[in-house]
Length: 195
Image 1 (spheres, rainbow, N blue to C red):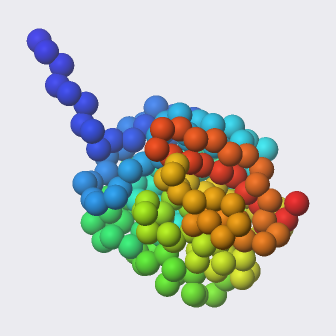
Image 2: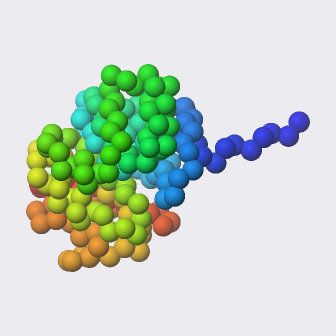
């Protein structure tokens, strides 16, 4: 009997207490969960700081990054997703995982959410829609009280985006690049606002 094809709109948790769980997410323009290989590398980088961390998954989408953080011991993940259908699916997945006490979800635009009262986070995941140039404005807002001392900020962008002084994804003044890689069309970096 032939196997039915695996649904394409699934993500797999790759480590921690939810390891191996597969979660469905809806079709939505620009929704592209961070690939397994990239998540594996990122969470190897974050291993010393993720356990007990307060995390922000700002352009949450499928929730792949925030859910992986919860799986690996984050104390709290705040998810922010503006598309109602995507946010509903994420809420259902968080309920399925029993993550209610350690996860919060806001159905809001990321920039508008950052205009609210600042609360510091230890780890921030930024994977905005590609080709919209959102990273500079988001990083500027994050620097205004949203980052705990020695916070780690994950930046994901299209690999051909501008870099360096004045580029589309140049780091804010005083921020330090810790790690950087490219995988296919994805450029990903781990930075900190203080050395």
